[in-house]
Image 1 (cartoon, rainbow, N blue to C red):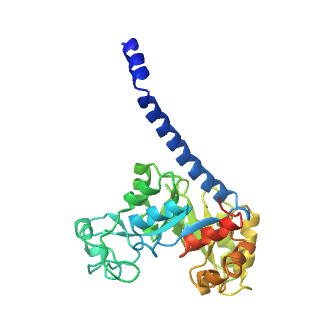
Image 2: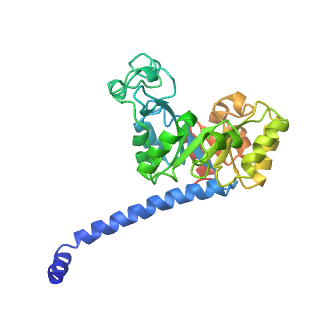
Length: 310
C-alpha cells in the first residue's frame, strides 16, 4: 500500500503542490489578521489602520457582500457594517430598521422573514436598484475570514446570537462589537461574553466630567476586551482630543470618525479630499491610529504615500 502511495506522489506531484499552495494561503491569511490585530493592540503613529464605513458604498451598495469584497481587495483593515434582525430571528446586514431606503422593498426588517429579505435587491448610492441582494451576517464573516476585521455595528442587543455565528465561522479574531454602554452594564447584560468579545466603546469627546472619566477608566482597566475607542468631538479644543492622547498613552487604540465635520472637529473626509494633511493628517497627529472613512481608497493612497500603511 505504501509503495502505491509513493508511486502516486512521484507520478502526480501536482497533489503535493496543491496542498503546499493551500497551506501557504492559510499562513498568509493568518499573517494578515495577526498583523492587523498587532497594530490594533500596539497603536503606532507609523502604521495607521483604515476602517471603511458601510464597506465600499461608493462603488457598490452599502453593506453589501460585494462592497466588503471590494474593501478586502483594496487592502482595508476594518470593514464596518450594520446588523438588523428579521421577524424569524435571522441576523441580516442593513443600516436602517426599514428596508425602503436601501432596497426595492418596503417595511420594517422586524416584520419581514428571511425569505422576504432574500427577494429584495439593494439600491446603490444614487438610489438605483441593482442585482445585488441583502447579505446575512454569516456571509460577511466568512468573506472577511483571514482578510480583514469586521466592525459589527447596531448589534449590541444581539451579541449572543451574533457570537454564535462568530464561533460557527471561526472568526473570533475578526469580529468587533460596538456599543455606548459602560463596562459595568456589559458585565450585567452579558456576563458570559465579556471575556470573549472584542469591544469598541464609543466616546463623545465633547464632555469633560466625572461620568466620562469613569467610563474611560473602566475600559482602560480591561485592555484585553477593548479593541479601540471610537472617538468623536466637534471642536479642536474639545476634551476628546485630550482624552484620546491619554488613552493612547495607556497603549489603547483610538479610532477617529472622519465621516462628518461634527465628529472630528471639521477634519473630515470632505476636507481631506483636497487637503489630506489638514484632514486625516490632523487626526493622526492628534492621537488617532485608526480612521473610519467613507473614502477608504483615497485614505489608503494617502497613507501609503506617507509610508503609514503597507
